[in-house]
Image 1 (cartoon, rainbow, N blue to C red):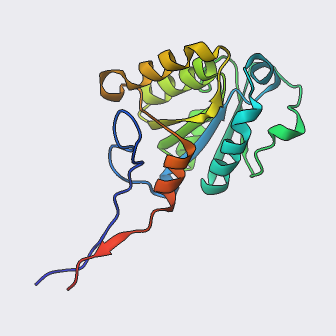
Image 2: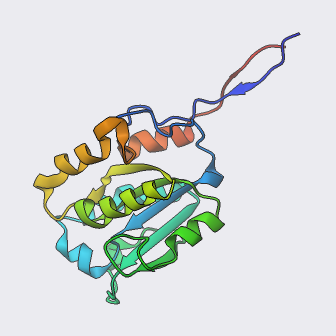
Length: 193
């Protein structure tokens, strides 16, 4: 007797260097969008941070858990166009790494989020540093590259290479469109009884 079951691939197709996440589980309860460097210092240090805002809004409207990390003591508000259009948990971090001396790990674990989409200002700074720290803590990570801005855009290929080396030592990289396509993909087929 055959039983019916629903099969869902649960991968971000086109992510490099592997279809993300490794366990094919894109459950909304396990997923969080972590936007780092979302403060005046990193916003003003980056090359064209406004380009990332539209992609961040699209991701924020599709991922239920949105965490915004502000670094250092930057209390100056961002310009109105930096609003992500979704309710967020604001987290302060003392250093460049979003986990350093702050509650980010506890916030994510309380929400059951262990699959992270990372983006924000400072691709080669706060985004990369937070990604590496998240990986060390056991999170499965992907960087939404078009939802990031870099301080020095010429370093972007090197930042991506560091994530992808050794088969994805720190995670995977994809575009916002690739991530959203995976999140909106329907369950695939049921075997007939």
